[in-house]
Length: 437
Image (cartoon, rainbow, N blue to C red; front, side, top):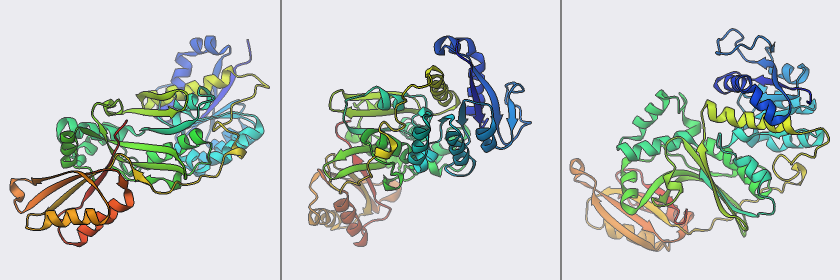
């Protein structure tokens, strides 16, 4: 049997402790699968005295994760610290430069520094594995990097944040407000005390940028993603979507166009009968469209200690199975130095159209003025519905518009004009509609 694979873990929070526990509890099974033992020989965390529910006394303790990466007697460095700078970046870079394999769950680090780190890994001939960084326990990275040879990806999209999906699911199922759902998500541990990173789309954008690089062979461009969160979604939107035969999901979408790559994160109305609409709660789903395979949908737990730990263990096991001299797959599917510069696509018409909800003064001429603003911007309407905003607000009406194919710029310009006309009593809502998910 080959020598044991020596693992160092930096970060012993929920995921790190779970990884150490699984490596201990499943040791015999992992040895049979990998052909060698996997042993945690070094660890690092902020508090050495904290009870993590697992005996780590046999592992050497390091207060500094960078020292662990540089000096520890390990083969694999597992980074579970978090953050795109500081100890996380420094320790991963140090481990790679020392010729050690790295496993990380850190999407923020990869979104900002992934290409540079990949160049070091490929130069040193070591693996940089990151399955846990995108969609938790779903094996989407391995699928795209290794299992789709010969396929040209045309689009990748999905539900990439469990917190947002949980909130939208409960808002629809129970008829409660966004704020109430968010508080429950925080109480249950699905959302952070400061939930901004999740609910405003940043987490989804980081994950999408990694998938974009894998799909299209481009350098990661997390700062070139159009982004909207879900904090402005109301019960009025949820109900209107249901009446029209749609369900609201926060989607990350990347697709190749004639002018470049389009990346966007925003609330989206998807047909209730579509597969993506059936993904509820904290579950994630990623759809990959290719020229050979067609559409592949991967769905499963996208967050939580067990799901993330499962993906980390899988990455460690892959390293344990590899042998010296074996040619590793490039970190992002293409050699890092050959990744093409990201070219942002020109704005184009959105085939699915738009949902626009306007709360307006109930007075003569408003309806005609709205229709004129739409016509002035060459927006064709599929439907326009006027309804009372509620018995307590009889001086207001809600106008719901569904457009045919048009551009984001045209819709925003029309809504801006209606706002300037003084007809609105509340902020307007604009949501893209996806027809063919």
